[in-house]
Structures are given as C-alpha cells and as structure tokens.
Image (cartoon, rainbow, N blue to C red):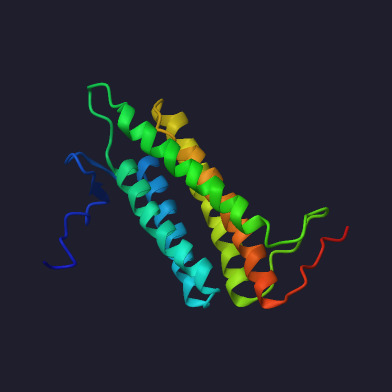
Length: 185
C-alpha cells in the first residue's frame, strides 16, 4: 500500500462511509485535534515517564484512535445512536475516573494553581493536557456547527482525559521528586 493516494490533492478527504469533505471541515478539525493529542501522548511516552504511567499512556493512545474513528464516521440518515456504543463510552469514562482517583492519591492536595512544568515527562503530559483541551473544543464546535452529537459522549471522554493527563503530570513530578511551582500573581 502506498502512503500517498493523491485523493486529497484537491483539498478534500474521505470519511469511513465514503463521504468526501473539505480538509477544513469541522469534523476533520476535530479528528486532527484528536490525532495531535495522540501524538502528544507519544511525546510524553518518549520522555520516559514511570512505567506505570507509560502503560496508561499506551492504553490512552489506543482510546484516542477509537475516538478518531468515531469522529471519522459521519452519521448516516438512520438513527446513529447505538445503546452499546453509549454503554462502552460510559465504561470508558468510568475507567478514566478510576485512573484519576488512582494517581491522584500519589500527589499532594492542590490548594493553588501550579505552573505546567517539572520533569520532562510531566512537562510533556501538561502539554498533552492542553492539546486534549483543544481537541475537546474542536468536538464541541463540530457538535454545534453540525447540529449533532459527534461520537456519542466524546466530549465527556476528552474532558476526563484532560483531567487524567493533569493528574498524571503531577504524579510524574511526584515520582521524580520535583516540587511543583505555584502560580504567583
């Protein structure tokens, strides 16, 4: 299989059901932002976080491929809400919340805003969190502009994911012995 197909040379791209859309379509913007988030997780993994965090990041990368696939499947004219998909999303959100709780106990309670910095892994995770928030905003924009729910509970999933990335950054700092710096006015 060749990497180049030339099918996008006119500024459009294909979705899973074969529909062609402009490369600046809100759906493609959302898919691209999710892809950027996945790449940011790869950068965080390359910064050699603790093994326990790296294993979570690998699972999250797989999750983001699923989110991207959901977004790349434009709704058909039929009712596109599948109860099974919603149950799977709810289970995924519950797992993200469980991970937040698991890693949050490894950190000191927050009483102030902290600067996004620290160990190389923590700094990369803070960056991934910001990229995840952008992906969330792009999905919200898609839902507003297209008048649809893009991928069921994708916004909820991305919201919890960004919370988890923040907690993972803090846990990476705690593991590395980095004292977080408070924001000063």
